[in-house]
Length: 261
Image (cartoon, rainbow, N blue to C red; front, top):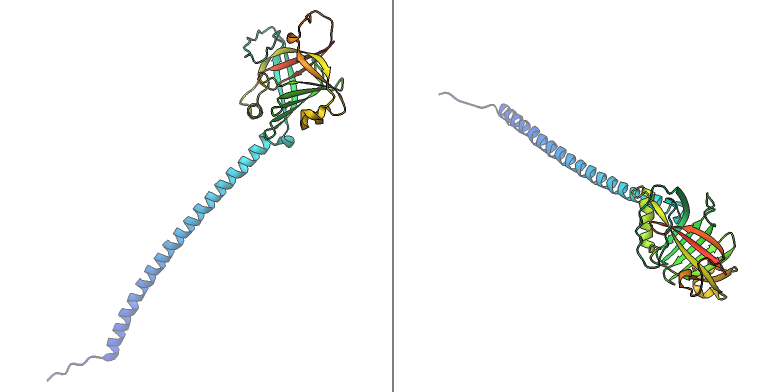
């Protein structure tokens, strides 16, 4: 009779070896899953960081452009236009279409402009012209009051007239034009039109003309203007004491001739 016996120690050793051979596979799967999860989390963080950087760039770029084109020099535009001498009379509320002959000499006009859209006011400073083409002036266009005031800096006198919307762009449109000029998308080379005004009477109560015109004309002789072609009995050839101011608030330059009887 043959007796078969198993070595218990050997069996336990084999079982233990099998168990040990299974454990590394579980560890490898766990490590692989952890690595995939870690990579996914890193990719998610990278994507979020990229979006944040992109949005930051858009915000910073927009702020820079707004500051450069709109808020430069404390919301003051410094702009210039080239124009040709043109013998053309401006009629109120009429549209202007003029061909530009080549024989007219190019001139340049510079202005410092501040537009207050909320108050519907345009503030313009015309420095001393380079070619003695007019007087330096400060101009206020008040769309709320529907008035325009000219301060002739050579005479230190103020002149007030109803706002002519055919030659003065509204504040929002004027800002858009100035931004395009500043960005170089619109390079004005325009023409000169003329309007003639006559002094009719002196204004005593300047404080009734609104804050901006009062601030411009306070303490100065202030007169009311009327378009010359509307004054009956006034001859064109009559000798008058006249001064001119050249300015632009649109796509063309205007020469305002102010005459005193």
